Image 1 (cartoon, rainbow, N blue to C red):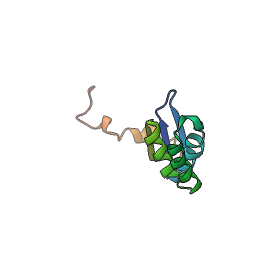
Image 2 (tube, one colour):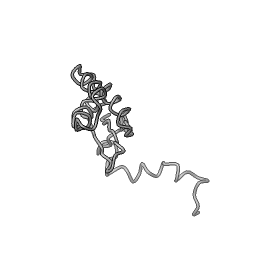
Image 3 (cartoon, helix red, strand yellow):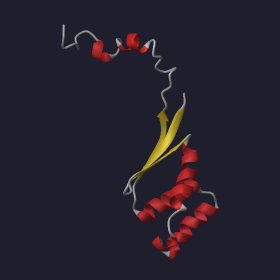
Image 4 (cartoon, rainbow, N blue to C red):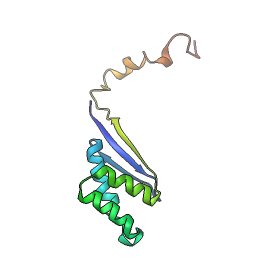
Length: 111
């Protein structure tokens, strides 16, 4: 079952990052979000914390440290199913949908 991992950075404007799995997502956030932080934004101590984690390739730690320092919320979702034509074949969906809860007897508003 194909899936993706994604993160929503609650900055202004919000940013969304999409990856094939959570490990790749951590690397994306480390390189596209954390490492792009201008040096003057962080104190020397905080910058050292983040850069050490990045240099040691502890991507998740670098991201978590950045979140704590910056105070910007980042929602991470580790697996979202990607629907394909195989999941919802166009020639069968009409028949399949009739077995959904909405169509069960007793749930119908129109008789």
